[in-house]
Image 1 (cartoon, one colour):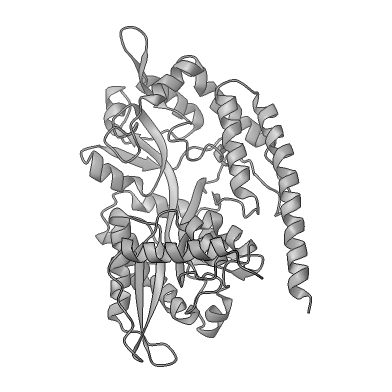
Image 2 (tube, rainbow, N blue to C red):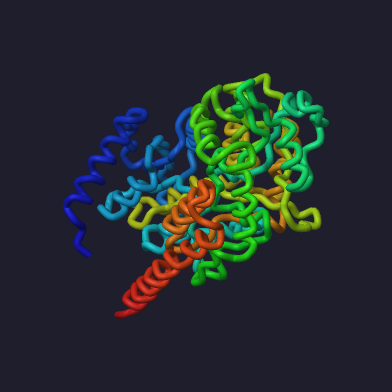
Length: 451
């Protein structure tokens, strides 16, 4: 296949820019060392945690089959998925890329990744150590395309001071959606003119899971890899619940104006951190931003209530950051050694401790939990191992699907569409796109099999 000159030139420029952006290039020692490159999305303390883990890997001086010491350079790379796509297309990919579980299957379907199964089988790598929701995320179309760097799950966060002010027990979170609404009403506050200055809860804040509310009502977004179920009755029920909040404390325009007063996520003006919203659905990472922006906040974490009887297996969205070997990487065997280290107890526990997250393992090293600074880490671990832990669907058109679901949420929130109409429109728009994508994949696989 011919490679467009623009893609090749772009890849070279990106590679040079990445080198200049990060630490100085360390050339391989002649005959004694091989240097591999790792593009990772993180900056700040998260990026430092990963780079420190890679430093630990380098200190081990692990050798390849030729006896060369493997040296890994970890570089913080913005828009890593876009740049990796360009570099892979141009034939100049790094040896490792840090992606998200929600888009790994898309890269796999583009034939942009190398499967890890040959290395897993060769080294008898233990794949039973992971919680099911994460282990499932590694695989797509019968092959393993990635392993984990840091996992996550999401939970209800509540402001205990606002609970106290409202006369609520600060140590008792809502256990049902009815209680959540009742608590939210008590926390909500207006000024002398009747304008809302604080709300107990808004489904639209922070807006990161507007596509996912159906899961807490027992809904599903797809039936297998080829059928879109956006207008599942349970998903419709979820958006009806959401829509009530858009007028619960004022008209949609007033609520929109209220939300526009929220500060950026990573700042003291964050809606939850500043006390403008009393309860929020957020991930395990939220503790870090609380620590940096409002360290005196007294808060709790608990499973977000579901509308159905979960029988103790609570609902959560469980995603993860992952590491992959791009198609065309020059040093895949050496890259696998880095992946293996980051998925050892030493490697993953080190990175996750640095980022304040749980690990993907069913069992951690004895004593590791006792050293963690996240006060509610066990809540997120319990959620990750739940039978109702879900991740984003592995659909070829997931990003388009998610965008359509988000647009549907917005139309419903602003009362420009009923939940039934909005979700039916999503299905009618996305299903043909999925059908076309599956047909393209089928033809590509046929061509790959053709001698």
